[in-house]
View 1 (tube, rainbow, N blue to C red):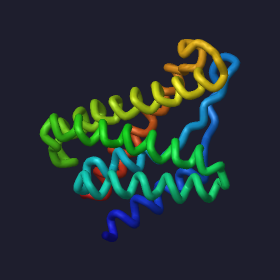
View 2 (view 1 turned 135 degrees about the horizontal axis):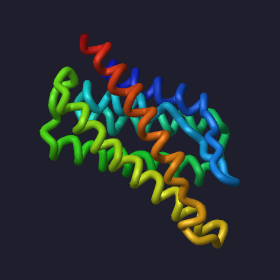
View 3 (view 1 turned 90 degrees about the vertical axis):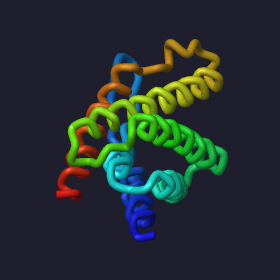
View 4 (view 1 turned 60 degrees about the vertical axis):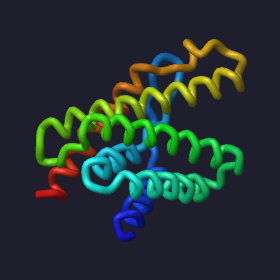
Length: 162
């Protein structure tokens, strides 16, 4: 219960402190929530992470006072993406955080998360703007987000477990 509350709180805080990445003529909003989830992926039971991520996004998005439909989309989007990450991590054996193969498993899991997240957002933006998906997908910023969140999340998990 405490782990769930801590992850949800860290997620809500990360949602309140977005960073912007500019690429070409577009911008992408970068959140450290996925770093929290990467660390949690290595440290907690999968069900705790799934519930905490959804709850944290819900609180974080509500604090931004976004429309209910946007909050619902974001909660669903991240819940689906984190479920993919949990499935990939489970298929790779869910190794403990202090073993180097866990870092590769976490990287593969969070890459799955990033692909699902990026594609879902790209499809929605493309549909809303009537633009080709290839124009709204930002693979460079998605890669930067993935690598940054992986590094922070794995480092956090290692520090916590040590």
